[in-house]
Length: 252
Length: 242
Image 1 (tube, helix red, strand yellow):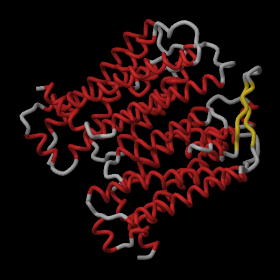
Image 2: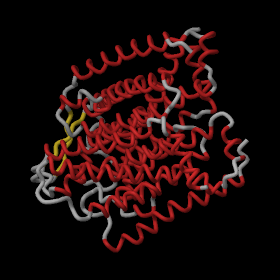
Image 3: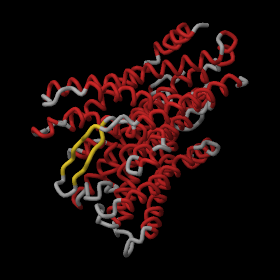
Image 4: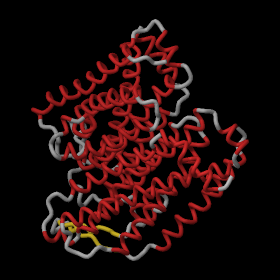
């Protein structure tokens, strides 16, 4: 079975499961959160509007996306457990192809979520009248970095969700990962590198500076963290190789 | 009969890893919260109160509600599987007892989590070298937090009973936590169950609740615990589970 056919099959299985609804609902809540946070802005804040929005979304992603990814991936894998379908599926489809199809299906949903965030930022910027030009480079970087981090989490949680019939495990792992990611943002970068969901903040194109004396917050763009990006990509490749191999070896 | 149902529910959970997650979360929250407090001790000047916010602010909005959501979903997952609904509804046990039994077990875990949160807070406070003893309000915060946690459990059990999917109610709890933060910040937290936990636990350290708010808070907890129970009992009586 070729990869495209396997992916189409995943979407066909999902047609009444409405995975997109979870992604849409979480995206809507995140968008409302951003709009609510931007309700009273003065001229200096409008000048930082795009950077503020990118930073806010990255922090929110570290809390929300691990859990949302857990919910999404758990639903995708649970349909096979519920119907005891793996045994039948493995007679018709290479197990590796099933693993890939589920991963790509989750990836497409996650790309849509991050894409929606960028659309929200652009739309809010237009409506609110952010006074600086659109930071096209930062937006592209944001999309790539947030998606990379989400893909790593999706892969990690998919391995757990396929391995364990009890979906309590991937969901709890998503929750705890989200919690660690948020808390790690208050720790030195060395600690952040150990927590997958902290990469939402580590790879974000925007960082924040809190001036305690003036009680003001300013946002600034940072150079592309090439080493962190390579580290996460390498971890993703290794985890993919390991997870796929384990799944293919599995006796059902 | 209720006691027997509660015992059965505990029996169903005995091999589940639920316990681990419930005790891991306060432990992680306390370790990381204390570390963050010690790193920022020059900004966080309110000693025990500052440490308390670091321990509770994130977990009470985002993670504990979601964890209660996972537990509730797990409790009903067993009934949604195979033909367990049919068996459950043919037992000589009233539907009120079935739902209340599950709620009591959830409540027990919430209370244990609150106790653990309190103990870890005192232990880490001593480790951090904070002067004096923990704030006298600590038992009050933990108790109100427990009431709020029970309300969330009641709401989540109802969602998990009516929604077959294991994961969707967890997503609802997560969204509830985010909206709950906005509601609490805008002063409308008493009208939203997912805000109650942070309100009751004084998670922002500045006192979401005044002394006059305690009674409305308890009324709110009672409403958000009672209404889902009433709905669930009605649903269980009317709905054809087959």
